[in-house]
Length: 425
Image (cartoon, rainbow, N blue to C red; front, side, top):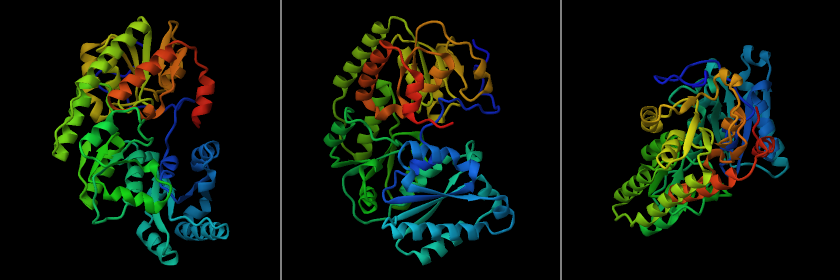
């Protein structure tokens, strides 16, 4: 095993290394999912660098402004006044250009936690001055990464908390947790229709804030990614909307269980699924044969539950040799333990451990599912699967097999892939 592998009895805490292949959905980009919203990022200049560069590269810079703080602003006691003043100047600027937002998200950084800012008082003052705008304080604080409410979880709760309580209900279902819309190739849409669902809603479907409120009418939330669990819990408390944990999986038995639980919650009969399962089994074994024993690597930035995917591949004859993941999420722990027990030869490596910088590059032909694994190992074949690309259900498995076959048949230009993915270090 490589020297930077995680220990089998737990993962190592260390200084974090961030490779050029690390990145993706930060809190600023996630917040931009809210239609008719604008952002004011309040922080020291260095803290806003990542979000600012990504916004420019992804053509989102016209939806975020920065109020950079000096040391004097912080120690003088004028921090809160600077926020009020900065928000006022920004809104005056936007009003002149007829670009007033419906929501102003004010992002604060780690120093805000130390200063003990009264966000409620600031929100009340701003709301009184601008009654037609929603004001919301959001956090970009990496210091909370190891808490129960890390930045990625907190921002999802924030964006869905903007939904107003309504007495109107319909047979719609919300997809929560997945930041990208699910691909229409998934059978999920067909199966939910058969279960009596009228509309399947994702935040990316909406261009206006009023239209976005439609999600408050849905009768059920489906949690597609673990990061959406807390938001769904809060929506159940606020709106009375129940939720079903329906995490993306690449194991047919887990997919069947998910559809069964959705049907139970809706009090309907689950449609027949065997035809989907048979197709998946056939395609997985077929693809494993076409790869002819090629080494397969994968990482946690490509899929939210890499051990789930690794288990599915190992169960179908794929030669998975390395899994790159910083830590094991609770919903993936059972799969992690299965791999450690059944396939102890698989190397499990922490992507942010500084020792990955001395990882010996692989000499054999390898297919990497994810950028980080490719960057660390030097794999020649790379499957561009950042954030799962909306793959879901049985259809997601079939499409993944097609993508793996294509990637295995061509050499990748990793630098170009990283540039196209707009990963900012």
